[in-house]
Amino acid sequence: MKIITGIKELVGIVPQGVLRKQGPEMDELSSIKDAFLTVEDGLIKDFGPKQDCPAAKPGDEIIDAGGGMVLPMFCDSHTHICYAGTREREFIDKIGGLSYEEIAARGGGILNSADLLHRTSEDDLYAQTMERVCEMVSKGTGAIEIKSGYGLTTEDELKMLRVIRRVKENSRAIIKPTFLGAHAVGRAYAGRQKDYVELVCKEMIPAVASEGLAEYVDVFCDEGFFTPRETSCILEAGAAHGLVPKIHANELACSGGVQVGVRYDALSVDHLERTTDAEIEVLKDRRTMPTMLPGSSFFLGMPYGRAKDFIASGLGVALASDYNPGSSPSGDMRFVMALGCIKMRLTPVQAFNACTLNSAYAMGVSSVTGSITKGKRASLIITRPVPSLAFIPYCYQTPFIKEVII
Image (cartoon, rainbow, N blue to C red; front, top):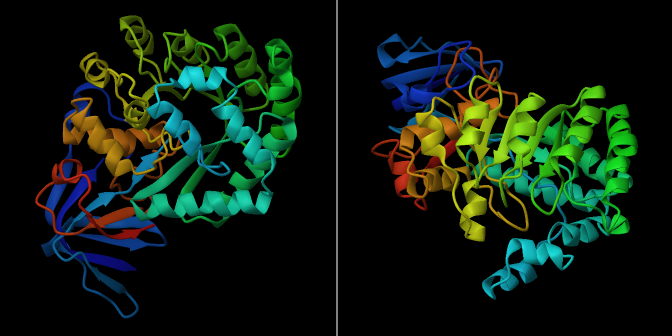
């Protein structure tokens, strides 16, 4: 058994059975000062005030938090970290004034990543992806959803998902795989979007399902990408093969993607930089988690999601990194939490809940991680001595992690 002592404050305690926070619950944060926590067989066994700490037995490992806080690790429910190479050229183009849409219209963006990935071996792609996973873990993330979507051919989409499966088998973090063949239309299908959608539905999805390579199916339902009708066809094909829907929506325009996602009981609808009250209303009393990606807004200079309005209406929100080479080349969830506070005006408690329990919910793992709860995985951050939770997003570049236990 591991016994963690010397905890200044144990933060993020959630009762068993609570899988997400919504509305006023986003302002709730349960903690214990001067605490202990025990871990057995990789799970949180017990915790409480230090006077209740059990005596160590022979073979137990004592970990001294040294007056730091102990928090659940971040969960990142939206990433594209299985990619080859980088896209600095487009970074320079953005500085020169080109928009995300203009770069995509010129054949860049996602298609450039697809070209690079096609030329990259499976072993090289695995090495690059694992390096990013290890980076994210070192910065405090313990659960990561990874999408395909830089293949855009059946062969290359399967290559990506096999790499993600290999990462899952070899990483300490929880890894959730998502099939995103409908990320863009592959170059070979330029001008034939209907044919590409048919390829996704009739060839890619059955091939992915036959190898058990994904749990979720995602679609980029937005202006210039896939329509609500095309999205419906893809989600129906995914459902026929047991894939749970997740949606990219409303990054570039009010696309109708949120409404499609809700209609098909999507686990999450992600991006939401551009939403109206209609999207807020349709999400009420649904299982679908609104997930916002402030790293993309920061990098692209786009609007930030209306998180405060969602919470005021009684909804919960999750925050995720969108770690990818084109629009958010960072998987630092502490920075995502900081952007939630600085740019979206969330309180530190709201941003913390959005980056932990709610993001775990948005990737289907909040029953096993995302909070300090007996029986959940012991995926924990031990901080350096810091004055409060608010210090973490406030001094967002000051190192705060002493150790991660995962």
